[in-house]
Amino acid sequence: MHYSKLKDFPQNFLWGASTSAYQVEGAIDEDGKSPSIIDMYEHPSDVADFSVASDHYHRYKEDIKLFGDDEMKKKCIIIIAVVCVAVVAVAGTVFGVRAYNDYTLQQQTEERIKSIDDTYADFLDETDRSKKLEKLSDFIKNKPSTNDEIAVEVLNAVEPKYSETLEKMQKYFTDDYDKIIKDNTIISDSLNKMNDKKKIQGCIGKLNSLEEIIDSEKEIVFNQNSQNNADSYLKKTDGLISSYSDRIQEIEKAEEQKAEEDKKAEEDKKTAEEKKKQEESENSSYND
Image (tube, rainbow, N blue to C red; front, side):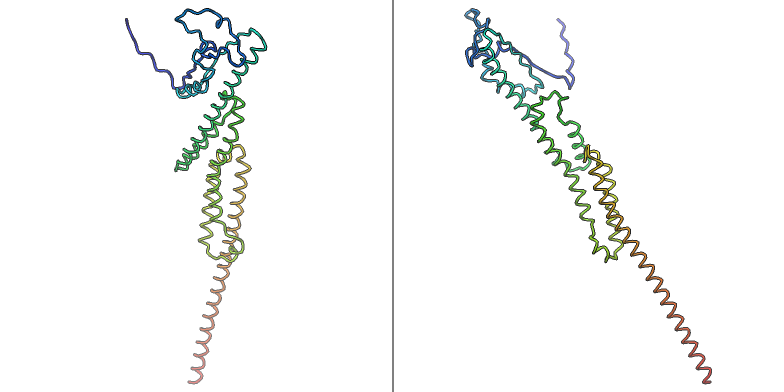
């Protein structure tokens, strides 16, 4: 016999599992459940009667966790409800389905929240700004939605956590913007008295660099509200840069005026000295 190695499954191959209530559920006479045809069937002595089966009815929480441990991405439980008496069937089967569904939703919610927490922890650990920005971008792209086959109940439970984490990740960048602006803000009274052009030009340079950073990061940092929020920052930096530029012009104008006054004073002094020398020379000639 010839054996050959099977090809590896693709990385994105989606594994699943399924079973039926009769094969795994057990709890033959609990919560109003009545016997099905299979339960009433006389089994051979060496065959299990399935009154307990895998006891999934009592162990469904453990079973769901087992699927998570095996990295199963989907679990499909096919529940076969044999309706003998309608009222009993509704009272029993619906209770089991609801309990299973509630716990499944709880597990999915916890897994999603843990994934969000892990993503934020990785974001905090990252020291490279560009990589932080990339992580934020990925977080936005992977926002939970019904398109990801997430139950609406899970989505509603996870949404506040996602929004809170997104805000904290974005705040890392906006806090940096705020710090740069604060460090390079000169209040009006001080600015009007300042004559240090080099310091003012340094502030302008840093604010210009900040505007370039904001422009390159705004689509990610501010997400859908990028223009409104980014514009509020740019309006602030533009206002500071404009006032600093005006002050530099005032300083330069004052410097030019002083230079002219100094030049005139020097010329007047020189003229006076020359006039004095001439008068001294004339007086000397007269005395001779």
